[in-house]
Image (cartoon, rainbow over all chains, first blue to last red; front, side, top):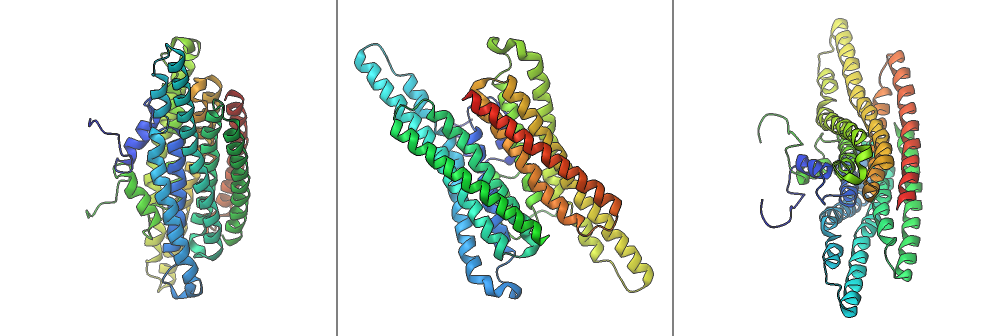
Amino acid sequence: MSDGPTIYASESLQVYLDDAASKKPAPGGGSVSACVGALGAALVGMVCNLTRGREKFAGAEDDIVTLVEASEAARARLELLLQEDTTAYNGVITAYKMPKETAEEQAARTAAVQAGLIVAADVPLEICRVAVEVCRLAKVAAGIGNPQAVTDAGIGAILGEAAVVGAALNVKINLGSIKDQAYVTRAAVEIEAIQAEAAALRAEVLTITLSKI
Amino acid sequence: MSDGPTIYASESLQVYLDDAASKKPAPGGGSVSACVGALGAALVGMVCNLTRGREKFAGAEDDIVTLVEASEAARARLELLLQEDTTAYNGVITAYKMPKETAEEQAARTAAVQAGLIVAADVPLEICRVAVEVCRLAKVAAGIGNPQAVTDAGIGAILGEAAVVGAALNVKINLGSIKDQAYVTRAAVEIEAIQAEAAALRAEVLTITLSKI
């Protein structure tokens, strides 16, 4: 064991799965949600890569190139968030260990805990934002991509939505302890809107997919 | 590059994601669905491992031990299916390359294609069966597990359902080419029932999760 954090993208898939199943603090449901979103983005990329450069789909070539860039950007972002989420709660843990003898110490500790909770909520909130983008990209892929890969576009949307709803649970559990009501309200409104959009996109993309198989 | 197939559990998570995004035939949406189901099973295992052996939850100890065994069995099965799906279509590809000059050759080729398609449908169908079991186990985990890990049980159910719906698309696309109507009807009825059960379980587990956070 090295002293540094485990970099999960470099670890084997087996280690990621085994660590997720263990009682280790990481990876937890937030990181796993980001991983699922990244898998969805990868499937959108696959649809593009099975479409681009083929004469039959030459009319969609420019849109496919734009789409593959967007899907790879979303995947890169979710791969970073998969890692970031494994340390997102560290600030809260450190803050809880701060001294709380004097009134000043108590105030400093409370402020540090609250700042840590906002970081812990911001990471899964960002996962929600990128994962709903995966659903949007999957819809484009289902529409213009190689129809032989349309189920992969469909699965991309399913996984984007699952990542949104999964990460949203981790936003919500942190919102329960955050005292900044303006932040809580803003985040709660945003995740509801993202979840509604993702649910609608999943349904739309499944309808497109089923119409093409 | 070795001549053997890539064993994805031993590869880095990065390689699995990169290969999923590429135009390589594997891993495709079926394997990725199995991976997502395995991640869901891992999260159910994590809830158990954060619950067992703690005095506070001693009353649930026996049920938790049963649950962790079931979740690890489901995960092991889905990890195998993640790999099996990467070769599930090989029989169809091989069959299409068979000679088709004479009537006998044509008949043998058609029979081999049809046998290959049934294998290609059976693998994602089995993914659906095990992934819905992940949803059932997530419901137990949400009910009796450490409430501090309840979002992981919720995410487990979300991922089990996503794996079901994703793999079901790959069953359906193969059913479209299978001529054995008895098989087609039986499989179609089974995946509809599994999808309905998974959707209901996801909704139930989300309700339990939100009531505890």
